[in-house]
Length: 454
Image (cartoon, rainbow, N blue to C red; front, side):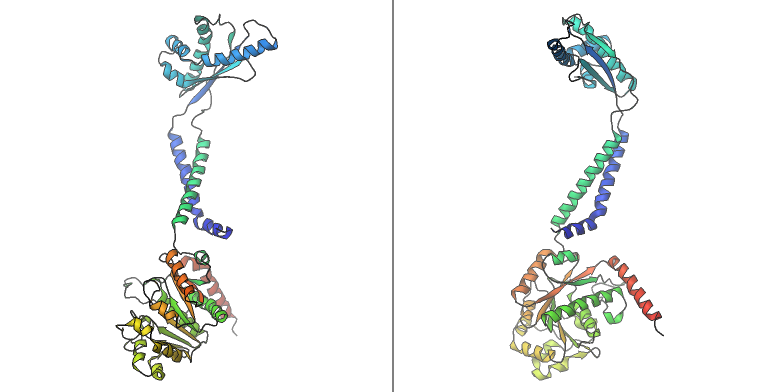
């Protein structure tokens, strides 16, 4: 991935990363607040040399003895004696879990720590173990025990040592952060949807623009609903998104010198017919003479967008002389004409492979600047591939949330195999919230222009 793609992923998922970190920190706080606090008291003992000398050898021997005593003071035998004489409410195993000792490096000092849920009890345990140690040494024959002195008794600690609330919350936030990042990485790795401009550009194909999601009015069945075209609502954000695609398409057509454009998609329900109708309308608005041909001979649909009859159309041209095919063209306005699909033919593949269709298309295209052919989906049927042999270029429509990367890559591969120019990809069904800024700019510019009129 490029840096730009990483930044795009960060902009897309930052809220999840923040939410994961905050939730993990909150859970850590709740768990920590319910944990029983523990306190740790410390007593210190000094170990003097048995001989009382101060030579280097004797000092080193004393330090070595200190390390030995640091292990003996928390040994099970000593703790059993402490329990028997002083801490009778505990077992030796329980006491062993509460105490630890360490020799301070390069000294003859032992630090004895005792931990308990009670401040006072922690101090009492530390003092009991420390005070009993000289007696234990004497009883075990390790000398008189006089060389061991408790020089710092344990006091009840003020602050708890466990749990560390600040540390636990920080660790929880960090763990939540990494878990959220890992989840985002997994989702991005498994997600093969084509949802953003970057997904299209990553395939190395031109991106013509995004079209907003068109939704049916309340109470209208989606199966029978016909999406509006530019003419029905010319100032809507949806119409403006089609105009933006048309502007980009106009540049692409100039660069490729394509006149007859096939509009297709990887599969059904991705908006190719709606895109064909609206792009034809947008091209016609730019003073180009445009012909829209319904090239779907199995399921013609273009007539519904313009409320035209479909009792005759492209399939009907095979029954008349080539020079008479223009009679089946319906005029929508001065710059836009539509040829509907006509009655469904029983043999669409044979019609698409006939030489007659090529000559018919040449005659139909002659008086127009641009011809837009709405074809069936390219995957699963041969129709679109047969149409590609007759046109100058191909436009592919993908739908956000529906089109997958694999089928789109396969579609692009088929177009490239046909050696026809791929003029670009249109991403259909993008979220409306992304158009809010554009709506403001459009309305503001329009108002400014209106006020400047004399």
